[in-house]
Amino acid sequence: MSNDVIVVGGGVIGLTTAIVLAESGRQVSVWSRDPAEETTSAVAGGLWWPYRIEPTAAVGDWSVRSFAILAELAERPAETGVRMVDGTQAGIGMADLGPWAAELPGLRPAGAGELPDGSSVGLRARTPLLDMPSHLGYLLRRLEAAGGTVERRTLTSLAEAHAAAPSVVNCSGLGARELVPDPEVHPVQGQLVVVENPGIDEWFVSADHASADTVYVLPQPYGVVLGGTARENVWGLEPDPAVAELIIARCARVHPELAKARVLAHRVGLRPARRAVRLGAERLPDGSLRVHNYGHGGAGVTVAWGCAQDAAELVGRS
Image 1 (cartoon, rainbow, N blue to C red):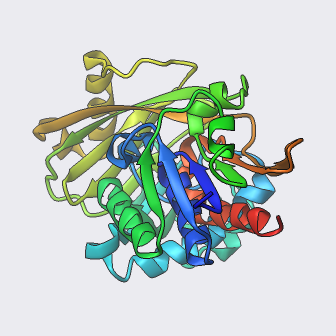
Image 2: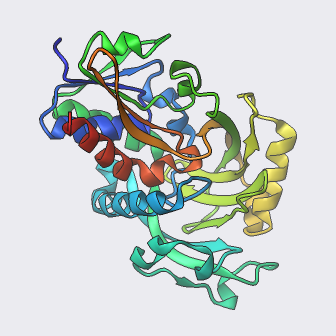
């Protein structure tokens, strides 16, 4: 065996996990059905914020550790695709957040003049905002620099990876539904629209975790990402024109200039959701180690580095 570890899955969870392992001296190969630019991660809006993910206590710790790393990467935005950007979370107050909020520098209640019409409460924060195509490219380069490799592989079983390395880290996201198999893994479909930026430089989010419709406005170097939807157990990847119109209309109530912004792209992604993230290890009958790191729903970007560190630690105990 030429590899110490096979990481199954080439999205943001798999790549960050592989980087932590490779930079600790492991011989790592990522096996992924899709190239990074075609994974769900590439479609993500890219805002750091714990969203639709459990368990609460662990998520807070993973998020805080990830925040610290992303804040460092934001010092080199052209290289890493990470920027620190000011923004507003409408519809929630400090009491709605977990203990992790105390670790977020500059987080404060929004003043009345900082909220759109119809919002009576909200928060202001400066958080990482990732240009995901650019960031995934950075992760691939960093993995290569650490000696890791990426291979295009379509697996029908995790046993195929175990035949190539003594340790396997399962970061297969939605694919875990079949590969584990884990029927608890299911898609939460998200649709978004990318438009030309009419001059917006802050992010805005209003998301009820129980609602299938959300509002987010995320300024990126390539345009403004408008969202969105959160449709449980919907597998379709084709954008719905009627849904796109509603997304633009909701966002235009916050920034009226968006109503006439030229549409650049429509995107749909499937968040790999689960009742709670599965991050743990199991020893197989043949003595090989399997570490699971999947089920991050809509917060993979937010928790990726914290989860990667914990997954790598589990491998290190082997």
